[in-house]
Length: 342
Image 1 (cartoon, one colour):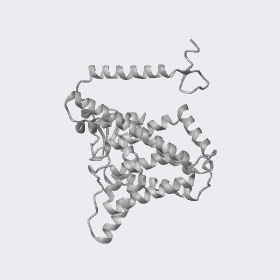
Image 2 (cartoon, rainbow, N blue to C red):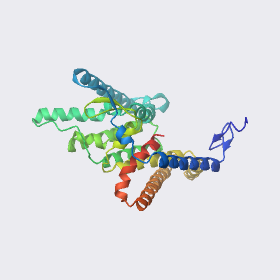
Image 3 (cartoon, rainbow, N blue to C red):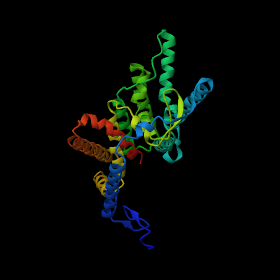
């Protein structure tokens, strides 16, 4: 029994790895049994009725505004620290806070926090803070009414481009860990986002920020949320996904993130290591733009494969149920968000 209880999955490590076929059969059996259980015991929608939840307390008045302002200033301060460290700090990744703060604490850490306790990224988002401040100043100077901060059901196509740009930078660019490259990315991303906000209004920033859109989707899984009346509510985990608005661009956004996550996993396989090693050898041992090009192609291919798989599944479902793929695709896209989180 001792050797049987000491197996890993994948490449060889300190313990013998499980064969790939065993892992595949176990995964397939798990998925099949899940669908059998759902088909037997979950014949009617349940999550939408649980999405409202139970009210805990209402965040209104001066104390709420003080807390909100404090959180906004903290987010803006932390952004300034990371941005300045990236541009003027030590050029070594190991001696500079920018890489870890951006690529780990923010990108990975805030996803965990969003799933656990809700869309906290919205409270700290420096871009909405800057856009709101600029809109307030503009209204005071011009005498025009302050534009609405609500992006409503605006399309999130700009967020698709924004998150794809970041995922390319993180997973394909050969020098993503360089503090100066972090500075360049943050600067370009910020200028593009705030310029769009200046042209289209501050509400545009909320629907165009790829990070904000992703954290909001993940936050819909959390057991707590803040409703439109600023009341903190407790609800069943995952229930919020049933109320995710089907705005244009949401399905591609989720598929892009899921495809990039798929590539991230595949990029750690032995097969991909061989592909990269061969390319590096052809480039004379230099990890540069040649490797970036290979990774870029791999990233795009993974996103395309995931998109085609989802499209095929939706069309098969449409053929079975008699509904249209245009109706089913946005309805089932939120079911992919837990996979993204996992």
